[in-house]
Image 1 (cartoon, rainbow, N blue to C red):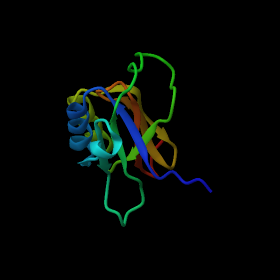
Image 2: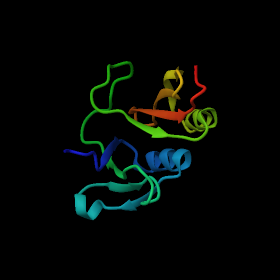
Image 3: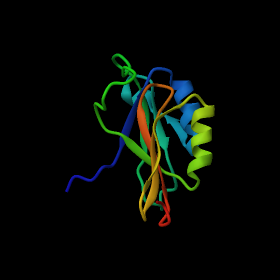
Image 4: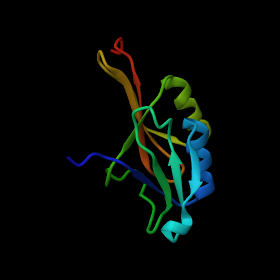
Length: 131
Protein backbone atom coordinates (compact mmCIF):
# COMPACT_ATOMS: atom_id res chain seq x y z
CA UNK A 1 0.00 0.00 0.00
CA UNK A 2 1.40 3.43 -0.93
CA UNK A 3 0.79 5.64 2.11
CA UNK A 4 1.46 9.38 1.84
CA UNK A 5 4.60 10.10 3.85
CA UNK A 6 5.79 13.57 2.77
CA UNK A 7 4.55 16.69 0.97
CA UNK A 8 6.26 19.59 -0.78
CA UNK A 9 4.90 23.09 -1.21
CA UNK A 10 6.55 24.99 -4.06
CA UNK A 11 7.27 28.60 -3.12
CA UNK A 12 8.62 31.77 -4.73
CA UNK A 13 9.69 33.54 -1.51
CA UNK A 14 10.96 31.09 1.11
CA UNK A 15 10.98 33.53 4.05
CA UNK A 16 7.47 34.77 3.26
CA UNK A 17 6.18 31.17 3.01
CA UNK A 18 7.89 30.12 6.25
CA UNK A 19 6.31 33.07 8.04
CA UNK A 20 2.87 32.32 6.54
CA UNK A 21 2.75 28.62 7.47
CA UNK A 22 4.68 29.06 10.71
CA UNK A 23 2.39 31.76 12.09
CA UNK A 24 -0.89 30.17 10.98
CA UNK A 25 -0.26 26.51 11.81
CA UNK A 26 2.71 26.68 14.20
CA UNK A 27 5.00 24.75 11.84
CA UNK A 28 8.74 24.87 12.39
CA UNK A 29 11.36 24.53 9.67
CA UNK A 30 14.72 22.81 9.30
CA UNK A 31 17.17 23.80 6.56
CA UNK A 32 17.69 20.78 4.31
CA UNK A 33 19.07 22.84 1.40
CA UNK A 34 22.42 21.05 1.45
CA UNK A 35 20.71 17.68 0.86
CA UNK A 36 18.41 19.02 -1.86
CA UNK A 37 20.93 21.23 -3.65
CA UNK A 38 18.45 24.12 -3.63
CA UNK A 39 16.52 26.16 -1.04
CA UNK A 40 14.55 23.43 0.75
CA UNK A 41 13.17 23.64 4.30
CA UNK A 42 11.68 20.64 6.08
CA UNK A 43 8.33 21.45 7.67
CA UNK A 44 7.64 19.91 11.07
CA UNK A 45 3.85 20.02 11.29
CA UNK A 46 3.21 18.44 14.68
CA UNK A 47 4.33 15.99 17.34
CA UNK A 48 5.69 12.67 16.10
CA UNK A 49 3.22 10.77 18.32
CA UNK A 50 0.17 12.40 16.64
CA UNK A 51 -1.38 11.40 13.29
CA UNK A 52 -0.15 13.39 10.31
CA UNK A 53 2.89 13.88 8.12
CA UNK A 54 5.72 16.34 7.77
CA UNK A 55 6.80 17.90 4.51
CA UNK A 56 8.84 20.73 3.07
CA UNK A 57 8.85 24.11 1.41
CA UNK A 58 10.93 24.02 -1.75
CA UNK A 59 12.03 26.72 -4.16
CA UNK A 60 9.65 26.84 -7.12
CA UNK A 61 11.35 25.74 -10.33
CA UNK A 62 8.82 27.17 -12.80
CA UNK A 63 6.08 29.74 -13.07
CA UNK A 64 3.58 30.33 -10.29
CA UNK A 65 -0.01 29.12 -10.69
CA UNK A 66 -2.17 31.62 -12.56
CA UNK A 67 -5.01 33.17 -10.53
CA UNK A 68 -8.32 31.51 -11.34
CA UNK A 69 -6.83 28.43 -12.99
CA UNK A 70 -8.25 25.02 -12.15
CA UNK A 71 -6.38 22.82 -9.66
CA UNK A 72 -3.37 21.22 -11.25
CA UNK A 73 -1.99 19.02 -8.50
CA UNK A 74 -2.73 18.04 -4.94
CA UNK A 75 -4.40 20.23 -2.36
CA UNK A 76 -3.25 19.66 1.21
CA UNK A 77 -5.81 20.20 3.96
CA UNK A 78 -4.79 21.05 7.51
CA UNK A 79 -6.87 20.14 10.55
CA UNK A 80 -7.62 23.11 12.80
CA UNK A 81 -9.31 23.56 16.15
CA UNK A 82 -10.95 26.93 15.40
CA UNK A 83 -11.92 27.51 11.78
CA UNK A 84 -12.84 31.17 12.05
CA UNK A 85 -9.72 32.32 13.90
CA UNK A 86 -7.54 30.33 11.48
CA UNK A 87 -9.24 32.02 8.53
CA UNK A 88 -8.58 35.42 10.15
CA UNK A 89 -4.86 34.58 10.44
CA UNK A 90 -4.71 33.37 6.84
CA UNK A 91 -6.23 36.57 5.48
CA UNK A 92 -4.23 38.84 7.80
CA UNK A 93 -0.98 37.22 6.61
CA UNK A 94 -1.76 37.73 2.92
CA UNK A 95 -3.75 34.60 2.07
CA UNK A 96 -6.96 34.76 0.04
CA UNK A 97 -10.23 32.85 0.22
CA UNK A 98 -10.57 30.43 -2.72
CA UNK A 99 -13.73 28.61 -1.58
CA UNK A 100 -15.49 29.99 1.51
CA UNK A 101 -16.28 27.97 4.62
CA UNK A 102 -18.97 25.36 4.07
CA UNK A 103 -20.46 22.54 6.10
CA UNK A 104 -19.83 18.88 5.56
CA UNK A 105 -23.13 18.10 7.35
CA UNK A 106 -22.69 16.16 10.57
CA UNK A 107 -18.92 16.04 10.08
CA UNK A 108 -16.94 19.28 9.78
CA UNK A 109 -16.36 22.78 8.43
CA UNK A 110 -14.19 22.97 5.30
CA UNK A 111 -12.83 25.71 3.05
CA UNK A 112 -9.97 26.47 0.67
CA UNK A 113 -7.45 29.31 0.50
CA UNK A 114 -4.63 30.62 -1.65
CA UNK A 115 -1.32 31.07 0.16
CA UNK A 116 1.17 33.90 -0.39
CA UNK A 117 2.83 31.79 -3.12
CA UNK A 118 -0.33 31.19 -5.17
CA UNK A 119 -0.93 27.61 -3.95
CA UNK A 120 -4.34 26.26 -2.90
CA UNK A 121 -4.73 24.58 0.50
CA UNK A 122 -7.65 23.66 2.73
CA UNK A 123 -8.55 23.86 6.38
CA UNK A 124 -10.87 21.44 8.16
CA UNK A 125 -12.45 21.73 11.61
CA UNK A 126 -14.28 18.61 12.80
CA UNK A 127 -17.78 19.44 14.10
CA UNK A 128 -20.60 16.93 14.18
CA UNK A 129 -23.05 19.85 14.46
CA UNK A 130 -21.96 21.41 11.14
CA UNK A 131 -24.89 22.00 8.79
